[in-house]
Image (cartoon, rainbow, N blue to C red):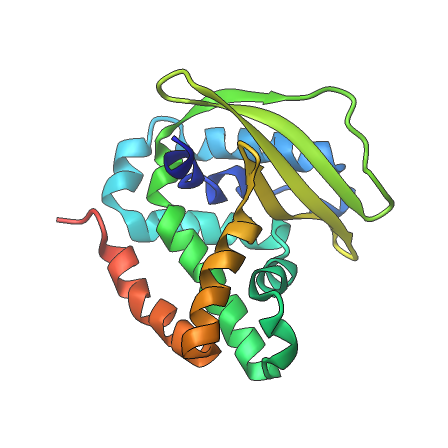
Length: 205
């Protein structure tokens, strides 16, 4: 269940036309759900058959509200310090694309109206906040999903999500760090770059 629900992560970040600078952490999450509903309603089958357009929808609306650099730095963990500036930038770019393309199709499988946001949530500090929610899968199962946000110069941005207590940043850091320790960061970047066409065409035919 957890693995299946992880496949909808990027969908929870998608927003349509809202300025992040004026939003509270709760509003970022709440309006993400509203934007997703508006974009997908009645068009799930279309996007399932046109994944490239689905990727474009996610990318156009996700990037302004997702702290790509912080997430990439946290995923690299100890390897961030030893990586060159070029390696950091390449990893961040390919990791972001990896997230979008790996999880895009899964965003069509959850209940678009099954979000419950806990009331009266406030930032835990001046620049950090956690928004606690529950999402309903299409089989009726409810799963706790907590969004971690950081306040940047451009407003609150999501950098991590905990699904049923499991952090996606920690999950990928464990996976990638083990591989980087054995093969090196360049090899991991190349592997992810080579997997992009596979992810892009998955489900077509």
